[in-house]
Image (cartoon, rainbow, N blue to C red; front, side):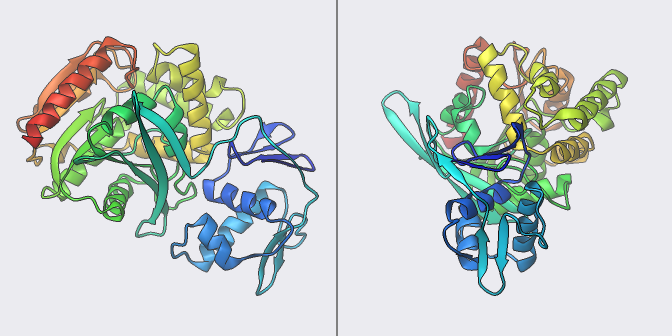
Length: 404
């Protein structure tokens, strides 16, 4: 449903909140909490129901619940004293008390379950699950497909549900889950995982991978990384060589852009951070178009629109800036020589996001690694380009060798 109150429009189907037409950036849990309260405005919502619906029943601290309630109030310009919209009934629970008008959207889509065709004549179903990292960060993950386990490490940027329909990502998901049980997750700070986190470091990214793998019960799997996911995959494989059967790395690097210290790249990246500060969360995609042009320069208008929107809904401006800074400082050069499992490295020749030489460097330093150059300008391969078909055929061959 679509709910209107005062200057706000809450679209439950699209998982969006607008004020006077302007999109408001909010953590997924905060929006889930607000939707629950608005939908249940004719009654009291207990703390137990709140935890069951928003946190899927997992154990959370009182401080975490209080923090999300406070954030929801701040989104609406409310506070604990005025309680114009969210009223606390002490010892009992919460209730939404604003005057609400509701209407049905033209189309609706479930936030929890999504279905789409993976191959002609077959259907898969995705369900998003949640787990908690050691520092209390909530992480969203999903498993889909059947077969040997395959884990895809998080990258810039992910959103488990929006990717499912996206022409930028859907062919990746379908291919990776065609003959495997695919585990994907949203990195801390973006997607359906918690946005407001204290620790946004490379070590935390590796710990998060450990957390979701354990939650999904995966053991003895192939590990696939794109972009910074390559460095995270390498660190995990060195830390847990007994669990990882092989590494598939695409468009990756051992050192972030601040470590690489190329003046032209540093200037471009700093300009991108400035643009992020200026207008990341606005409806006007101009502020995000620079990222889209770099990541998928050959994208059609529709594909570019999808990628622009993916970035907007996947992270707040603050999270996007913190992620960029954390990724810039990555340095796993000392770990490359410690990789002891079969590895294949793919990289697009004209990649404008990560230099082609970064991929060759990883392959050169990882013992026995195979390097495959792809004739593409895109950091994220598009389904209609020949490089995608080469990637798929080579990856299938590599995985078949490991399974044989």
